[in-house]
Amino acid sequence: MGRLPDKIAIVTGAGRGIGRAIAEKLAAEGTTVVVADVDGDTASATAAAVGGLGVTADVTSPESVAALASRVWDRYGRIDVLVNNAGWDKVGPFLDSDPADWDRIIKINLYGVLNVCKAVLPLMVSRGAGAVVNIGSDAGRVGSSGEAVYSATKGGVIAFTKTLAREMARHRIRVNCVCPGPTDTQLFAELGGDDPKLREALTRAIPFRRLAEPEDLANMVAFLASDEAGYVTGQTVSVSGGLTMS
Ligand SMILES: NC(=O)c1ccc[n+]([C@@H]2O[C@H](COP(=O)([O-])OP(=O)(O)OC[C@H]3O[C@@H](n4cnc5c(N)ncnc54)[C@H](O)[C@@H]3O)[C@@H](O)[C@H]2O)c1
Image 1 (spheres, helix red, strand yellow):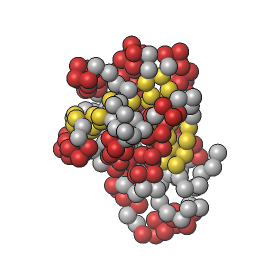
Image 2 (cartoon, rainbow, N blue to C red):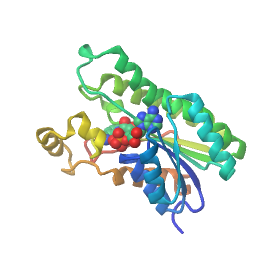
Image 3 (spheres, rainbow, N blue to C red):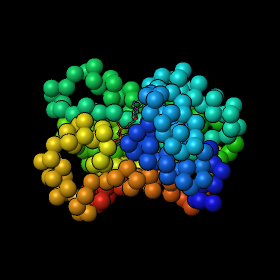
Image 4 (cartoon, rainbow, N blue to C red):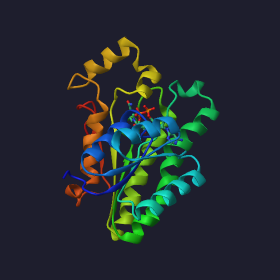
């Protein structure tokens, strides 16, 4: 039967990486997953793999996100779980950074979460139930050199999670945040994680002596999305093999 039987979930950025692992895990726990990604091909591929619905959606566009929410509502009549996972970064020293890149990072990582919550939460409120899991980052908790603006957006996601959790409690909607440590994905490789020296240094610094796999994050997301976490809201949980402890 699974931990999330007969639920309807939207996972953003689920075409690949951590989002795809979350889609796979939620589906394995009994959920019908709407795989939303700006890359329509990967959205379709993940959806086919998990038996869900693939939708091309850009979290930076309120119109695109509104269309996503109404499509899911029209088709299923409810949205039980929302996972805001889509994210992006460009690494480099802050003093060398280009404000055009700040815009992109803030639009995807922070506005993206706001846009999707604004579109989906009224539908959850109308049913008086729901669970939201935002994917933050340990960069937003403890900082990360070369990721100043990214850290600012993820710190924003953590703070937004807490206030939204307070506002949504009366509607019986829980809102939590999962912060990955370094996780073996394409994004991580693109940000320098394909450099063996960096991988080795990080691996040495992590008490469990390995990077996170996307599945490590998916397991925590599935728990927080499930009724087993029914008394948990406004929390920030790091999944980092002990790299960060707070
Ligand atoms: N990989 C890590 O080490 C790590 C660490 C901390 C936090 N995170 C966070 O985890 C999440 C997933 O990261 P990942 O490593 O799997 O990245 P990834 O790049 O492998 O996957 C991200 C997915 O999001 C999609 N996406 C990007 N912009 C989008 C948009 N505007 N609208 C919709 N979809 C969009 C991409 O197409 C891609 O499929 C992100 O929020 C990231 O910040 C990752």
